[in-house]
Picture 1: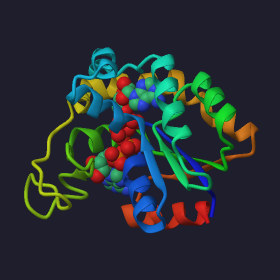
Picture 2 (picture 1 turned 180 degrees about the horizontal axis):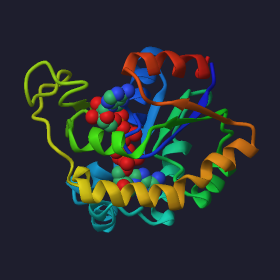
Picture 3 (picture 1 turned 90 degrees about the vertical axis):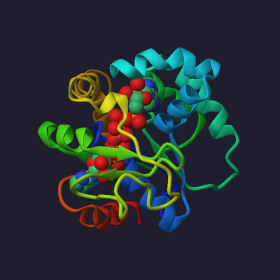
Picture 4 (picture 1 turned 180 degrees about the vertical axis):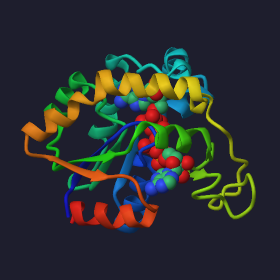
Length: 210
Ligand code: AP5
């Protein structure tokens, strides 16, 4: 199986959902910059205070903050650990920094159209404790408003309001979409149509990773 995997794809394309399944079934360490940043904001750390306003508006957090954060995380991985990067890199500068530290085996790009993404995100509910995600229609929790895995009360992310989602999609096109070409040229890109049931998509993800 591929050892170092990047999950590309726009906001709401299913990176967290598929990354979590890969991690549960195959033991990958999943490094999600979004989860790390939200935790930093909740704990009001120095990183969180710097990142908060960028995130609230759907803008990217500055490269230097993210690159420093991820350098530290990557250095602490034991040799040979299978790792999934979810939400990183998001700019060419971040991709260059990652490439200096680790060899990427696969950049898996989930392709989903804008209106489906808006629908997914405006009806997403997230767990603040274990970071599991649900969708009120497509993937509802067993007990309304509570996380199946840890029982915490679910919440609607501030940046999942429609106006902010549309800005995140614009930022994605401007800053992150060029990475598909970056990894295509490097022979690392695999694009999967991200529409269908979560399990159908996971079948394709497993084929790409295996
Ligand atoms: P981040 O948390 O990384 O957000 P994102 O990339 O916008 O991705 P999402 O978490 O919104 O979506 P996802 O693709 O994981 O989809 P999910 O599986 O949840 O980043 C947040 C912010 O942090 C950024 O805006 C930025 O400010 C900052 N940031 C983070 N990383 C950064 C970086 N590297 N550089 C700079 N700034 C950074 O699924 C979405 C919904 O759809 C769920 O409800 C799910 O249940 C549902 N769903 C999933 N799959 C399906 C399916 N097949 N069918 C139907 N519904 C589905």
